[in-house]
Length: 373
Image: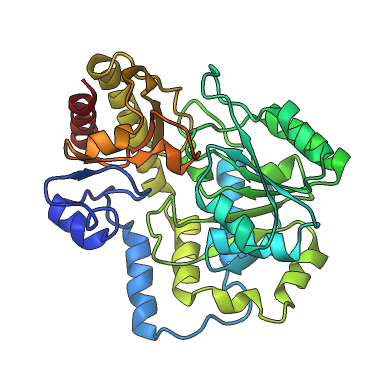
């Protein structure tokens, strides 16, 4: 079901992840998978290109119904077929939500965070309020007391990553309900990035944020779970029909930012690729076990909370006294993402991509150990 890429194939298929490293360097940084597209998606894209590459028509091309079907099968979430408004990318959708749907006031972004979360707040002309989560906590949390202080001080939007990148948490329903309660009390709009939702791993459970807070805006896409970042086809999920119409009626309609290829690929991914996704989750579950077994042996001082979702391991290497272990790793033939990208000033952390072969995961651990010991 899964088709692995050789090193040479990966350099051709993933020109950023593999093409931006020197020969012999193992890339485990950018959030892409060392896998070919699922065959139904590949076939849908080839067919769409043969038809032409025109603008997408107004409407969603069946994307909303396909996503609603996926949500029903995987999360028992009954979502209307017309709840989605297509947009180009998840970050473009978040910017659209900030500019068109969120109240005036500062925007709360917990850290560590996906770096563009900070950037999009600035681009939207909003004040950024960052909340640094405790790196020493046994389990990563939303730190609701700090969130409430930010809301009480005037913040009116909260950017939620559900599940979280890079912490790998699938937030519980109780945690999300408590956040929703705070948001309701202070008149805060939550914008939830749920692009990693299908990548919730065995033993954990994904809770769609809209099921605890119907006022929220969710932005999601099939691009991450089905390894097609070049195909822009994200969607806003809004339960309020009037707000969906408001977005569709903007002077520069959201329809002009999405791709007909993205819609074609997204429909097939949400509708026809459950078996491929099941095989992927089995692979990722195996690779997190490989890392859990090999990391303590190679780096006894390393600390990593159990990975509940995503294929991105957040590893605390402060015990080795190296401020930037990512820089040290690169000198030993491994590229990982430095923790400071996700939280400026945070030393001793890296993000490690596990969406590859088990052998590459073991080799990444070996090279990381060589860099630090």
